Length: 87
Picture 1 (cartoon, rainbow, N blue to C red):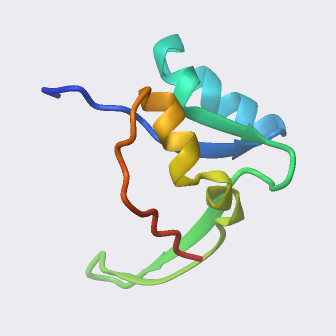
Picture 2: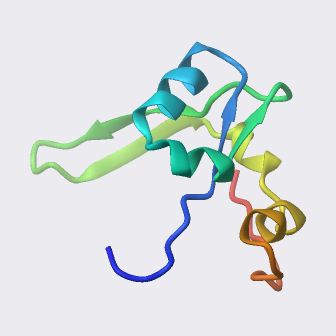
């Protein structure tokens, strides 16, 4: 990758969250929120015979821990005018 790229995500304070954090290099840790309010996101996908995704079912609530203020703190400056959260 080129440029100044930051991973921005949230994980729960659980085994899955700890495992995910261990998969990333240490410099990514500062931009991963560890929250006790939500479990680490997980989902299941159902594909048809052609490999196209037909349905996704999951718990993505941990993403709600991400907000513009937190992202600005990670970056050290205001980088977002708004934050869209899908759930």
